[in-house]
Length: 245
Ligand SMILES: NC(=O)c1ccc[n+]([C@@H]2O[C@H](COP(=O)([O-])OP(=O)(O)OC[C@H]3O[C@@H](n4cnc5c(N)ncnc54)[C@H](O)[C@@H]3O)[C@@H](O)[C@H]2O)c1
Image 1 (cartoon, rainbow, N blue to C red):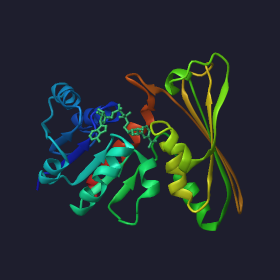
Image 2: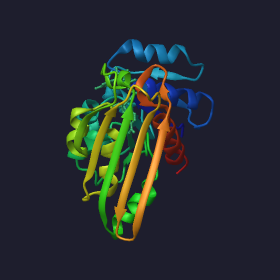
Image 3: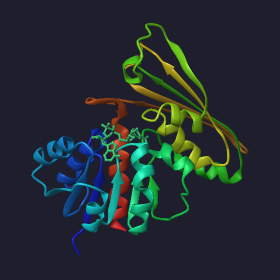
Image 4: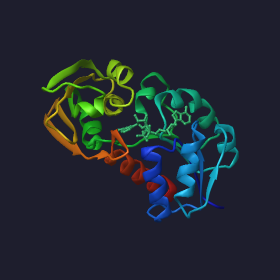
């Protein structure tokens, strides 16, 4: 049977993913895409030689019988389409992980990639033994945060659940950590720093048998500075794995 991939959201991540499919980094036969902004879907289709089918809504996307659906749209999109996609019994890759914090994620068809960070395997292992404290400090250029400060400024300190709501485009990384280490809490600090060009995430973990420190300095996507290129590549990697299974 032909292997199809469904894509919800044809922005920065969706486009990098579609290009990877065209370059055969991910092997599938057809890409079925939906975007509320029809022009975005059209732009993606004309940029590719690979067969792309544009559909008008998620029902049509599911009717095409994709093996995997990738959400690369928004937290709102996850909340809107989650039940419908899972009812179709297809694998779902969620990029807007903030939305998952208030949804039931028990279904084995729900997947999230490591996104703009990594090391989730180590965190998940430590979480089994017991995690005392997880802190993520995200440092971005003011432009990537919609700010205009000329000196370094801490613009948020709190916890992942609140951060993912207040910064729905920025703090999916914190949500991803929270989903990985739950029920442990993830402390979040967001720094708007004119001195940095890269989106930088530093993660500190104190757990029962040691400590961890991870640092990711990611080039922002040229067309969408909110998003790190690594996030798109993590979706590609997970999609590759799910399609091969
Ligand atoms: N997990 C992570 O580490 C991580 C990292 C970066 C981005 N993200 C998240 O992934 C998502 C996609 O990121 P992006 O940079 O590609 O965003 P983008 O803004 O470049 O593209 C999103 C696209 O989705 C479309 N869209 C929005 N809501 C929709 C809906 N309800 N139905 C259909 N289409 C819809 C938009 O029109 C747009 O074309 C965002 O929510 C972003 O915050 C997660």
